[in-house]
Structures are given as structure tokens and as C-alpha cells.
Amino acid sequence: MKHRTGHLYQRGNQYWLQYRVEGRVIRQSLKTDDLETAVGKQKTIMRPFMAADLASVHAVIESQLRTAETTVQTALDDAHPPLAVDEAWRAFVKSPNRPDSGPVTLKAYAFQWASFAKWLTQEHKDIKQLRGVTKSIAEEYATNLTGKGITPNTFNKHICVCDLVFRILKAKARIVENPFSEIQRKRLRTQHHRELSTDELKLVCQSATGELRSMLAMGLYLGARLGDAVKMDWGCIDLTKRLIRYTPNKTARRSGKILTVPLHAVLMDIFGETAPAKRTGCVHPTMAALYARRGAYAVTDIVRKHFEKCGITTTREGLGVYKVAVASFHSLRHSAVSLLREAGAPLSVTMAIVGHSTLAMHDTYSHAGEAALKQAVAALPTVIGESKPVVALPPPQADIRPQVQVLAETLNGKTWRAVREKMIALSVAPSAVMAEDKKQALLLPAKV
Image 1 (cartoon, helix red, strand yellow):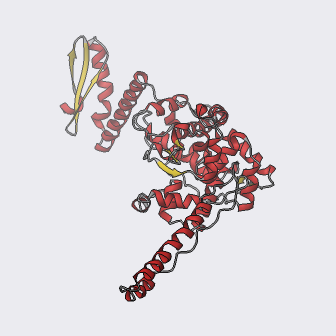
Image 2 (image 1 turned 135 degrees about the horizontal axis):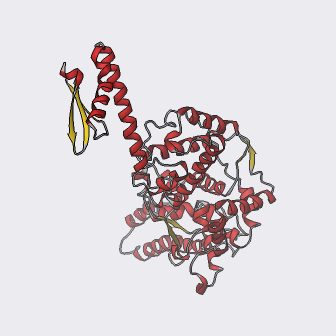
Image 3 (image 1 turned 180 degrees about the vertical axis):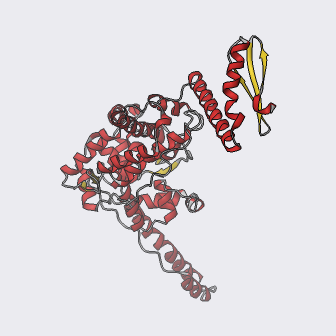
């Protein structure tokens, strides 16, 4: 039958064979310009079809299709080589589809990916292309991470970064299946920093000097995070209005929300120690330079050593091989929140001061007024230096309206002079007492 023998035709100088199997047309170059050679190749190719049953014919077709697919894939690889493992990170950073992560987050991602790439090079030297990483290799890497004794949180971060890189580069690396997509994440056990007691705060803050002293005050009286305190700019500080306005680095890219926090008297004194002509640029230039050059750890280490010098335990045994921080600069932020709440500050005011935000609470805390903020900040105890006692305002005066009414009922042409004197005495005396008390209450803490 014709569809079992096929027929020859020429395309240019080359002979081609065309045949049909089960209605499917197949064309194949014989790669020769000699008719006799072409006929010989035709017989060789068509021989399996001449006497084979239908199942055998299908098997031959599938084999030829697989061969064709392999040939196409080889040609594609030659023209566009698959993404190599050592090129993956650069490709990820340049990808328009990756998350819009900030510099700090991206730096952490780079470290976590480098850990995987280094391990892969050591354990599977034959894997050069990203698509060569299989599920079994991903599982092996996860087992390796667990064996290091790292915390569940660190484990999850490493696996999530690998999952992210493979997902973003799937098309470019011609990956069929993401090997990290099914790696089970570990259950987290949240470990919080503790707040410091008032005695600990006094010891830590009063023994600090220089830029460290100012930073610790910002941590306590602003609830500022370490990075924000270190890099605080004088342009954010308004000593005239006794306010500080800044955008926390953690939320700068996400929301850009500016926090407006009243300055506590202690902070006013500390900032006032700097001459007006020098109030430009970074408030803590030395610490900021160290932070930029060596990272947050360098400054954190200074704070840790200061805490330990004050007799405060800063770490404890963790779930992994590393110790867990229990007291650090961030403890000042926890202390600020606790002290504000203990002072009776509304939840919305506390959240507005320290910059905590959730979608559920946003509308509530965003309406906190400046008066409420100032009252809450002023309620924080003075733990840096000695402060003069502040005389409390007198309790509210008794309502004098009933007495005025009684006097009014006795008012006539003969008594008006006496009634007038009594009313004047009744109204003036309380005001005079309150004025004197108010004068005493305005005494500010002594300069630190």
C-alpha cells in the first residue's frame, strides 16, 4: 500500500521521504542527492511498516518522534544554553518578575542562595545547570540544613529563598518542575525579646555615654528600632515644636508612613547638648558609618556588650546550636510599649507612637491626636540622669455654682456690696491657688 511504502521527492538537491501512517503525514529528509542511495534509505525506513501490525507501527512512530524531540531539544540547547547554577543569582536579580525587595532583604536572599549554591558545588559537582537540580537533591539539602541545628525560622528562610529563585527562573532555566515547592516548612516557635525593668533601664541608660546614650534614649522614648535610631537625621527633629518626624526603614518601601512622635523632656535635653551649628546630617555619624560598613551586627554587638556590662543576660540556649537573644536594643522598644500601656495610654496612641500597624487596626490608631501623643510620651519615667520632682497639679476645685446661687438670692439694695465681695473672693481665690501650683508644675527634669 502506498501509505506503507511512502514516496520520494526532491527539495532542492536533497531527497525527502513522505509517508502516511493512520492519517498522519510524516516528512523526513534523507540527506542525499543520489537517487539510488535515497531508494535504499527509503526501504530501510519503511521496512518496519511493511509487515508490522498496528501496535508495532505506533511504537515505531513514537520512537521516531522521541528522536525528533531530542534533536530539537539539542538544537535549542546549543542555540540557547540552559541557565547555569553560577549564573542563577544574577538572573534572579535582573528578573522583572521577582518581588520588589529592599536592599537589606535582597542581601539576606543573596546569602541564603549562596549557601545552597556552595553546598551543591561540593555535594553534586556534576550538576552545572539549574534544571539539573531534582526533588531528591532539594530534599537532601533540606536534610543538610536540619543537621546543622539551625532554628526552624532560619531553615524556612533558606528553603523559601530557593523555592523563590527556582519559581522566578522556571521559564528562563527551562525547569519542568520546581524541586523546592514541596519541601515541608518547619513549625515556628516565636521567641520574643523581653522588656527591661525600670531599674534595668536606669542602669543601662545612665551608664551609657556618647552616641550610645542618645541611641538608647531614642529606643526607649521613641520606641525606635536600631536601624532607625542609628541613622536618624537632624532634619527629622523639630526642637521648637518638640516633635520628631521620621519614616521607619521597615515600612518605608511598603507604606512610606511618617511617624510623628512628641519629644520627651530627656530627649530634648540630650539633643540640646549639641550646638545648633552642628545639628546637621546624621545624629550619630560614627555609629551610622559603622552600621553602613559592617552591618547591623556590629552596632548590635556594641549594645550587647553594654547590656552585659550592666549585668543583664542577653542570650539563652535556643532550639538550634545558636543562642537566642532575649535582651537587646529591641528590648527598649518592648519596654516603651509596656510603659505606655501601664501609664494608661490608649492602644491607638501607643501604636501611633511606635509605628505598629495592621489592616484591622489602621483606622483606629491613625486618628490619635497630638495632645494625646504628648500626654502619653510625658508619662514615660525619667531613667536617664536625675530629675527634679514635678509638683502635681491640684485636684479640681469644688463646684461654686450652688454658693453663687445662694448669694444671688440674698442680693438686694442693702446687701449688694457684701454679696459682691463674697462673689469676688469665691471666684478669685481658687484661680490664684491654681496659678501658683501650675508655676511649680512646669519645672523640667534637670539636664542629663
